[in-house]
Length: 174
Image (cartoon, rainbow, N blue to C red; front, side, top):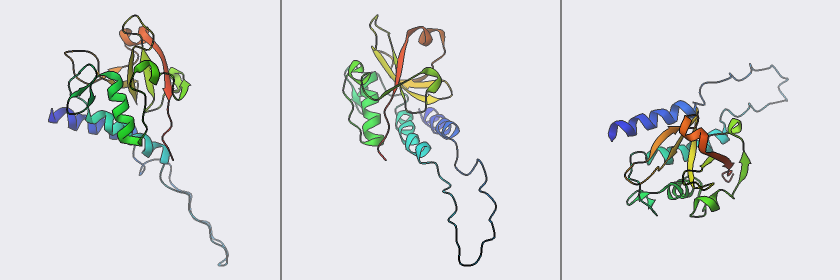
């Protein structure tokens, strides 16, 4: 379990990036002493905001699936995991069911997915019967089924790509 947690935290940093890397700020420009220019901000608020949801989702890795579960103490089902992550990361209360969650936010295509977006699947011969949280790099975290644990999957695997119903973006508050 400890190894999975360390791997998960490392994965989070890998996919969320580091603000110390990236484009260098422009070289200073000499101005008359009466003028000053503030440097551009070096942080990326959207990336930081989404990282909190990823951290919350990754902290749930390895926890037991439990039908109706919505806490790390008792376990999670898929929609309970999503509701818990959004509440902890952004203080957003989502509906309890997958179907109701699929009606929130803005639809996004598979190609437009960003970390923290919700991905929906038909796993019970019923559209929008399963939900996960997109992590980036073609991966999502979810609580799969009874007898299993919260884990990471590839959205492009044969099983998941055949069952994809859509994705939604719920923006965190500023």
